[in-house]
Image (cartoon, rainbow, N blue to C red):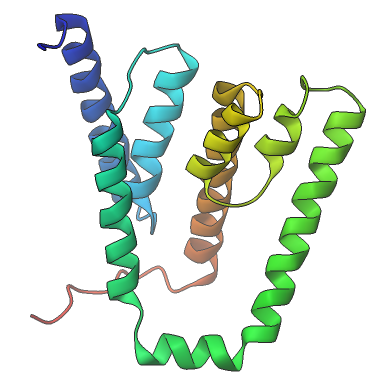
Length: 177
């Protein structure tokens, strides 16, 4: 089934905007430039109502690729660090989950957002999983996705800024071959 010309144009515009934003952030020496740029572009397109949908098999394939990349990045040194600092890591994760739950509870009780949308949108975790679960439980998946990805973008942007401000501003050379 061929794609309509408008859909192809929107995908092309999203890819171009993602590349331009990523490249601009890279020029600004942001550590996560090519994560932030496409994420900001996708949020902007989504908020403006662009009817772009990733086919389910392509979405699942991309999730599998990301999982493989993460698994490939885990080394013995990382495993040692996780074991040594496990209690602290669990404490930070627990505090994060509790803070997200508290924010969701307050937003739900104050009726800032409809139904359980506040709870799903403020829950920390995989944004795609939260959106899928929110949809299953009758929440507005678009609003949950917006909340989740804006939160992710805010965390990545603030972490990038902190890293940029607190580390040596001289960029490292290319890694050895």
